Image (cartoon, rainbow, N blue to C red; front, side, top):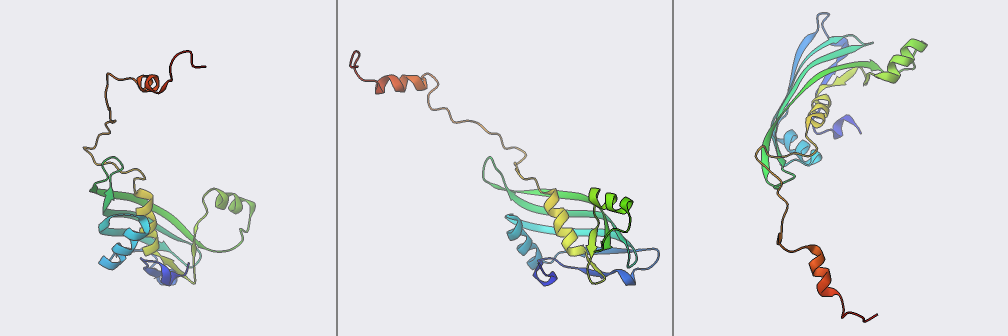
Length: 172
């Protein structure tokens, strides 16, 4: 997927990061939130903000912060829309795509590979969308929703209906 195809993209050049790092805020626009809601199968996204501290250089960058969103999901019990808050902590390392230079680095990358620095940039918009997706409840339920099974007639057993279907005795 190209950077242009992402619904939310905020590129930061790692070669321009100050030595002490910098604070970056990513706030999705209305059209970006609508596109993400469609991508994630949500009824809507009212707000989406990522607040990060970005530090590093061209060889390695670190991003820490928080993603907060207010989304409208569909309850799996009642099928009614409801609003939910999403808050996810972010702690991600970035490095250029390269072959590990040692066995130790290869082992570390196998456990927790860094995200890629592409063309000297990291995409904090894509990171914001990714952590929103990670924070979504896959089976959203309204706080007051309760599943109650449908009971047709408590006095009638399912086997009673089978008796009615049975032919006359001794018909075999």
